[in-house]
Amino acid sequence: MDWIGTIVAGLAGFAFGAAWYITLGERWRIAAGLSEEQVKQGGSKPTPYIIAVLCAVLVAETMRLVFLAGDLSAAVECTAAGFALGAFLAAPWLVVGYGFAQRSPTLAVIDAGHVTGACTVIGFVLSLLL
Image 1: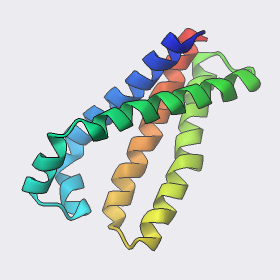
Image 2 (image 1 turned 180 degrees about the vertical axis):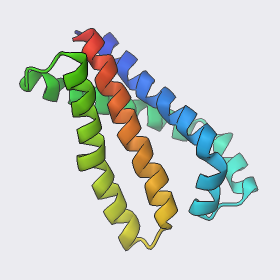
Image 3 (image 1 turned 135 degrees about the vertical axis):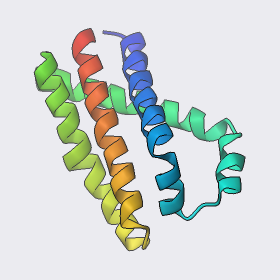
Image 4 (image 1 turned 90 degrees about the horizontal axis):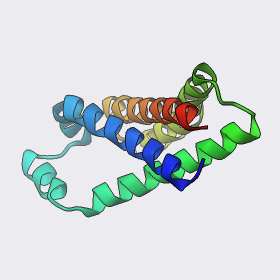
């Protein structure tokens, strides 16, 4: 698989995030302590979206390398590994950071759910392309 597959997997993870935050946007806004105006101002700028896509592609490429090193290619293996990487590697560090920053536990759960779900989706998509 080449970079095109990695980009496709990253875009799938980004799309999951878009659906996640569209669904939980109001709860996320309140938990983040942001006003509707602040969210509208931030949402009109392309920079966060560009960064999010680039980061999703970087995560997808890292996961691809991990899967190749572990000789994983079946859908069940890659999807489960994606879930594990999100839930037991990425999300805990995010929750720790939020705890020290004294951020809302609700925000931590929403954002940890996002990274877990996005990694799971990326894992599944990678399984189709490996």
